[in-house]
Length: 167
Image (cartoon, rainbow, N blue to C red):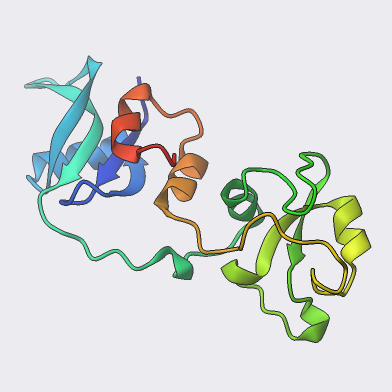
């Protein structure tokens, strides 16, 4: 049985993943409605309830932009597709500061990229332009799909229509 449930905002925008227990509580309190159900039922001594896979909140939640989300190595790697942003390698990955910290570069979403160890060593304390190592893509704050894929790496196929092609 699925232990994680996809939570959508009232506008059908994916927000997060929650536990099955939390999803059932939201549904029973009429704070969410079930959009997708699993085949298995949850039973108590007095009632039965079909386990939800996807729920939608009945009210709009103003979600802060993902820029403020905590930065982690796993999130940077997931945002960049688990490949070096200089050479496309998938081995020996590290996190690189585009503008080096020694030059005042911040540890922010728009200054961190995934780099393989050889590229990170080659770039050293230079900018990509100085090192003649152009970036594959401009670093940016990740969308909700990155955090959902980290929270539920083995997501059910029933989530795909709600996550879109970027998931």
